[in-house]
Amino acid sequence: MSANQAATTDMVGMSYLESLPRKVVTVYLPLVVFLIVLLFPFYWMAITSVKPDAELLTRAGNPFWVVAPTLAHFHKLLFETSYPQWIWNTLLVSVVSTFCSLGCSVFAAYAIERLRFDGSRQVGLAIFLAYLVPPSILFIPLANVVFGLGLFDTRLALMLTYPTFLIPFCTWLLMGYFRSIPFELEECALIDGASRWQILVKIVLPLAVPGLISAGIFAFTLSWNEFIYALTFVSSSEIKTVPVGVVTELVQGDVYQWGPLMAGALLGSLPVAFIYSFFVEYYVSGLTGSVKE
Image 1 (tube, rainbow, N blue to C red):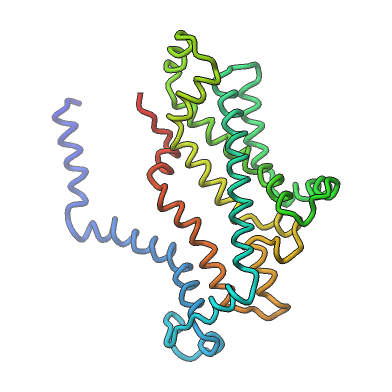
Image 2: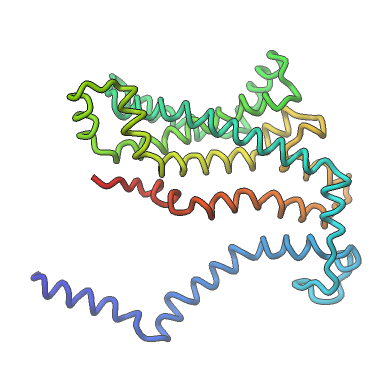
C-alpha cells in the first residue's frame, strides 16, 4: 500500500467520528457512564457527610440531595475522636514505608536489569511472585516476628511490615522502566571511567524520575489504604491508621455512625486524590516507560 493510500485510509477511518450522532454513541455516552460510575461513590460520601441525622435516618425526601447541610459530622470527627492523630499516623507510616521501599527497589531493579548475573531473570520472577502472595497469609508469620521483636502496638511495626508487599511491586515496576533506558548511555559512561554508583546516581535515576514517581504513588496508595496489618499489629486508639480507626472507632456494635464514617472516608481519600492529580503526567509516563533516546 502506498503512502497516499495509507493516508486516505486513515482519513476515512477518522471520518467515522465526525458526525455528531456517532460521536455521542461512541465517545460521549461511554465517557458519561464511566464518569458517573467512577464519581458516584465520592458524591455519595460527600452528601452523606453533610446530611443531618434527621435526613440520614428517614426515607422521606430525595436521597441524592441534601436539604439542610451541616458540618456537625466533621466537627464530631475532628474534635471528638482521634481522627487527626490517625491522619498523622497514616501519613508518617506511608511516607517512611514508601521511601524505604523505593530505596531498596531501586538497587534490586537496577541489579537485576543491568548487572546481568546468573539467574537474574529468575530472581526478578521470584520477586514478582512474592507480590502475588496475599497479605492475609503473611500476617500470621509476620505477627510472630513483630511480637518477638517487641514492636506490637507501635508505628515501627507497620513501617517494617509494609515493605514486605511494597518492595516486590516497586521492584517489578522499576525493572520495566530501567529496561527502557538505553544501555548505550551506561556503556559510554563506563568507557569514560564512571563507576556503577555514579552511573546510577547521575544517569539512571534522573532519567527514571517518572518511573520513581509512579512507583512511589503506588506504594503510598497501598500503604495509605492498608488494613490487615494495621488491624493486627496496632490496638491503641492513638496509634491506629485512618482505615482501621474509622472502622473500629465509629462502628459501635450494630450502630453505624454514617455521618462521621463518610466524613472520615472523604477526608481520608483527599491526600491520595491530590497526589494523583498533581503527578498525573509523571504517573502516565512512568507506566508507559517513555524514555527518549
